[in-house]
Length: 437
Image (cartoon, rainbow, N blue to C red; front, side, top):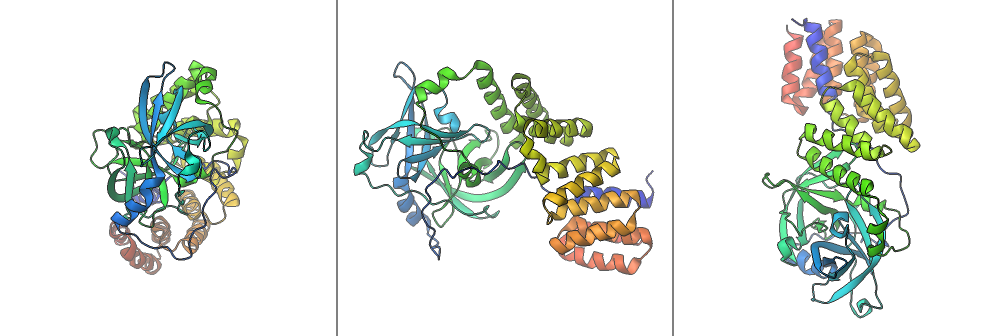
């Protein structure tokens, strides 16, 4: 049976390490968009106004095989006069493709300007001269700044099941961060086959994400990739679709498919299936850093923390720039803490804070590690710094209260209980029970 002090520490660890995991962000690259200037005051549109404004900028993408036969369909949208964003899988394997405007006019896709296979994104160029685009008025859709708010109302316009220019609405139900995948936005707006590549819009008419997948057995559980990822795509010279597939080795394509399947399983919370796919990715492509990051996350979820640390280190070895990513060092610290490697955990958290001095969760987790060390003065210092940076951080207040309980300072512990009562009732009640045991 655990002692009261041990139970306090266990609870504090749970509260401190339940913070949302943040994935390594890609290194910033030249923007994929010639972005319109945002107005000083953003008008909030009602849904009919938004739809009328946005529909001309949304397209249906039709793909064809080498024999000229129709092979698939998706959606996309203009972010510049002759540039269109869609999902990578919409055009993957296509010999040629064309877009169909809301007016019914079709225009040939000239080539692929940029791609991000890990996030299932592609930037296409259309031929303005050869396809008659020069005679069409195109309004590029503006990109939203920052992440959307949970509960924010959104709309999706696309071509589900071939039903062109279909509108669905919903809310942002969650903003999730997953190593190897980055930020993923969960939405309630309907997404079906053919919706892939549709713009997800806020009520200012700005694109917050591109619709990418749906959970078949789920109800109103759909996902989209936020604009930050296609902002970061590196734009090159257009590559002809027919030539891309020829140059791709079978092992590379298999790795892409496995990574996509792993990502879908991870989004559904099926960790066992996800890690099996990611392991097959690195078997086929050992230098796939994003897959190693995802494996690290999955291993930690399975409480295989030594394996998680090794996977994170593999990712850093493959991509040297990841050594400067604060989030990865925090994840390594969390796994060391779970293994009881307290000094290694503290070293990892210190590295995290060195890279990102305002990382409140790293301070909180370092405080928990010092609490496990019974170094109460350093634990207090770390928790207070976390609270200074983020005053409403539940894990830090609980941890600080836990230190005061361990020190027998009931008054100070009660002060933290009072703060927690306004932030998280369950955490407050747990701390209260510890105080009066």
